[in-house]
Image (tube, rainbow, N blue to C red; front, side, top):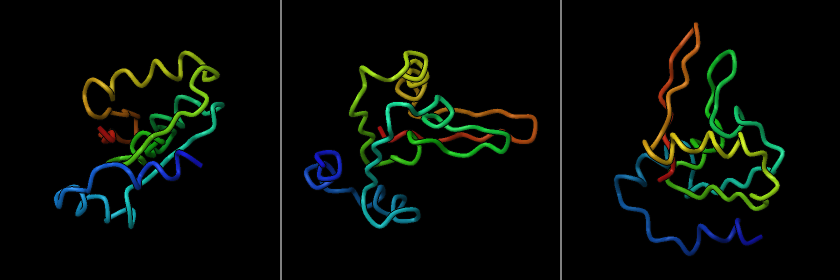
Length: 102
């Protein structure tokens, strides 16, 4: 419940972010994935690259409630998006640059 209410206490959305966010969501997104989430589910990927929870939380909140229960390699894949503000998923069929919420 805290994760769902968190978006109401974050600062107001700047106009540039609001324009970008409302293309996908009506309000700031709040994503709270289950701790059994895979690294592909968190970052994105698959045969046809799709965004993961990190990109779906763009300009919003990514809430990892049970972080100590998450598998270590899943948390390790957060390093690149934290450092670079996003990540690149490269497959034989396509290469996609995905944004991160920070």
